[in-house]
Image (cartoon, rainbow, N blue to C red; front, side, top):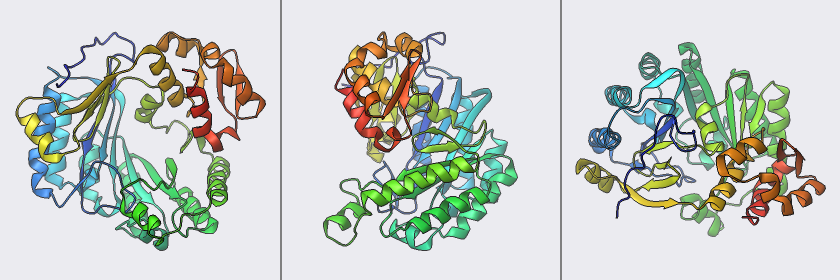
Length: 391
């Protein structure tokens, strides 16, 4: 049974009423070996129908939704043609207007971003472009099945900077056969280009992906844990030394260049999710859309929500989830805010593990908050797992 749309009011707190929206564009020219996202390749003939479906899904909310942040991700949104991007911008402008001073972001791959597309996005009100660079090393790009070369990344960064938009780069460390020297070169090049925001992700071998299959067959050998830790430490030191704030486990930003949309997730606040495979969190209910392209288009055309599954967490579960997200931030878990949002005092709810984690040097705490120490950032997943046992 498809759940009813959660009804909220604009004056509800941000963890109840969404001030943010995510729109998923699944189309890609090529599927990378490590990718486990909801994507569609070889389906470009369905793009126009998909955009119509997006419009119909948003319309099911019953009216225009004014928001503060909008993020268009994928997939590869920049894979769309100029005309298709213009159509998308028209849909978003009609149904999801962003208030003055808000943030509007789009994910792009270097090889599919053109000057004409950047101009269109800037004219339509986009404020930042997130580029899936992953590396400046030809060898690393090849091991990740990325279709672009290093020069394409440099050209794309320059295009975005010339337009006056904020430019963010995604970089991956721990790729097969990647060395610490190559990683240092990647970081240095991202800094040299004047990038505003840099996300650094350790490579994960998601089950069922081509890259994970190569590992199982012995065709690829992951880098060791010690090297991966050294690479993360290098990112923290190198980017911190270059003036980037380490404001979230994987994210670094220049002054006032944080990604406001992603901060909504880390605060565990409400957000709309539209498109194939998109997740929404409205009125304390989490909905996940179908990952089947044709089913998504068909359901939307019938005026039916394309929800695949839905859940409403109980208060303790929501508190645990909020802690897990908050702890990723430099601010950590703020006691007063957490109490207001969840109804629990985090210093009491997590007390049995907090003291142990502080003694072990993974957390620091005071009456206002607790957060990861520098050492705790290296074992964040383990710290979060231990705290989750308290709920």
